[in-house]
Image (cartoon, rainbow, N blue to C red; front, side, top):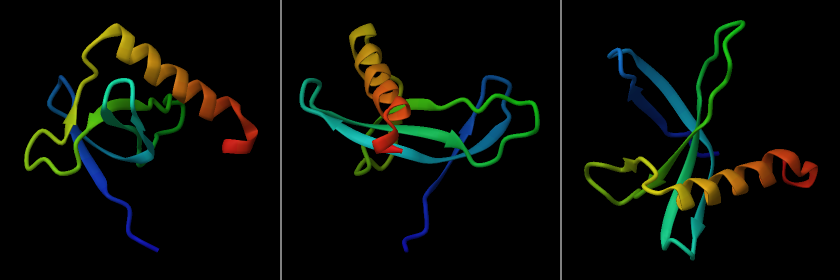
Length: 90
């Protein structure tokens, strides 16, 4: 089994947190790949936020980019809702 990649993200306060891939997918409509990250560890009482990104695994820098449009965010949200709510996909 391959070791999962850990992404270290810095929040607006300068704190670093580790995230891992929850799932990724390609969109033909937007001609891009996307990745959904989840925290590696969550403290008791803390919500587990998942974060979507545009994902370019071949980029030397800027591998993760924020979603650019409302339409793109709506599409990613629809994919996430489908996966999270379909017991066959869990």
